[in-house]
Image (cartoon, rainbow, N blue to C red; front, side):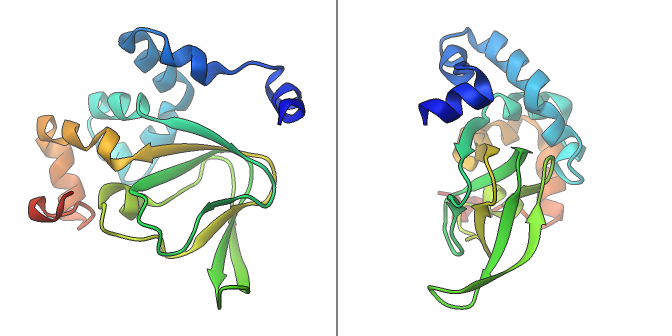
Length: 170
């Protein structure tokens, strides 16, 4: 782990530094670094820019080594995943021990849109890092409270059938 940290980041652990910064600065930094993942998304990019900025501040960065599983099929983890750097295999599991890899996702792609907008939906596939990958996770609970202040964005998600009904929300 230490070797990988040094090789890929020269020992910098930016996330721990970000946790200690004032919120407005953290928001500005994360939006500058990762906001384009949201702004360039075909659905999320239609949301209000201020909502996207605040959503970007909720990103959690995780590093996965080759062969690490990011999430399993049917997991209810309430997260969207954005591939910042790396390759992720989409695995269609035939059984508990075998699976096919019909697709690979690369830099700038994402998975888990429905799961990140609706806490009661599980992932359809298992996702595994093919090589060292930097993944940005966006949990539903970290930003869903903001939707009430952006009714137009909420209407977009509801019109596409992506949001959980209020009585279904956890």
